[in-house]
Amino acid sequence: MYYQQPQKAQMTFMKLFCAFCALLWLCTSSFPQAPREKPELKDFGSSLKKLKWDAQKNQAVNRDQPNSNGSSDVDVIRIETSLVVSDVLVTDKQGHPVRNLTATDFTISEDGVPQQVGHFVLADNVNVSRSIVLIIDYSRSQFPYIADSIEAAKVLVDKLRPHDQMAIVTDDVELLVGFTSDKRDLKQALDSLVEKNRGSKGFLGIGNKRQQFGRSAQFSALMATLNEAFDEEDQSPVIVFQTDGDEIEYLRNSVIVHEVPPGVPPELLGEVQEEVEQKKKLQRASLTEFSLDDVYRAVERSRATIYTIIPRTRLLGLTQDEQIQRLTAEDERVVATWTGAASSTKLKSIFQARQEERRKKLTKEIWHARLDQELKVQQALVELGKISGGWAEFLETRSQAAAIYNRIVQDLNQRYIIGYYPTNKERDGKRRRISIDVKGHPDYVITSRKSYYAPEP
Image (cartoon, rainbow, N blue to C red; front, side, top):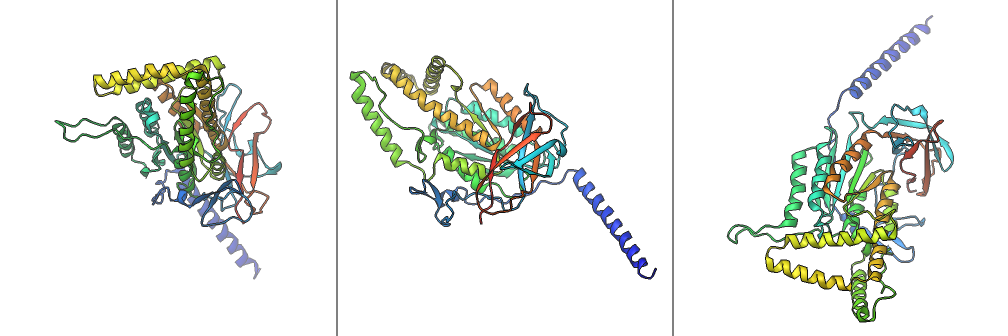
């Protein structure tokens, strides 16, 4: 009895302590907490300066950290903890989200080895803080779409929850607005891009502002965001990548190869050859220090879910005749937009004359060459969403804007945040495959990231 009394007292104390901890956890998880104040993003884009193209490895490497194991050296946020987290969307055959699933409903495997679910949260939990980066393209190619794009982005801003924080990055690789929950600041920043695109005449010649456009460095902006915007404390990192992706032409190992199309009429051959040579020259002079494959690897290394919004006419999945028709209509729309924006009747006439001359030179062969390039760009943008566990959508008209951004918000709210501690503890920096399923439901469609990179040694 002499030794049992202290032991009983100790057990009683432990029970009370555990009960207190449980109550504390219940209180802190049942009521909304203040959103975490994210660190300020200083010198945004600096990670790009560290990248250098290595022709022998055929990939980008970090100037400051030479790699010894042959894997990608892109300077990105790496998984330093053992918990691997993925945002998971479950839908039935009709595309309807499947709700009310629990942790025990899921099976996870890594490289074919079963894993135990160690973290499970519903994304619509009021305590889940989402860190969202909107990368928006306001370059010349986006001029016909910029007003629609900005109005679409405002839909997302309006849907932000109290715990959510958003930052805005432009295709200048500029941090337009750092992470904030202030919807007014976010909308004013978006409106400023429209104002830059439009310019202004001022009053009596005073205050005149010329049109300004982004420099089409959209993939560079994405790389900088993946490298610098998120840290391990971000519960649900999200990127909305709104662009037509035309910087892809200047990435290393570009999928865009400029060549003279076969069958060009002899009277146009010399002119087309000269134009192709000029494009090749510009491409060589403007190459980035990373490739599209480097971007894909950076996406896999990041925990961010990417939603790609493409302000462009969809060409994927159509017959070639339909694609050519849409591409032609797209071209007409772009010309009409620029003509309509001309500041004088004389300038409008110049635009129209140039278009007439241009139409004569757009032969069937040239249209097919343009189509091939457009398809490659669109496919690359769609692939970004798939790799991250997100998706891509085309913003063709303003009437689609609200539906697309509402779909993003609904998608985020309907996801499950699932994590596990890998049984493979090796810090080898290698890619590992993830497979997530719902028990007893092979018919369910799972949208989530399919792989990640283990921590470096």
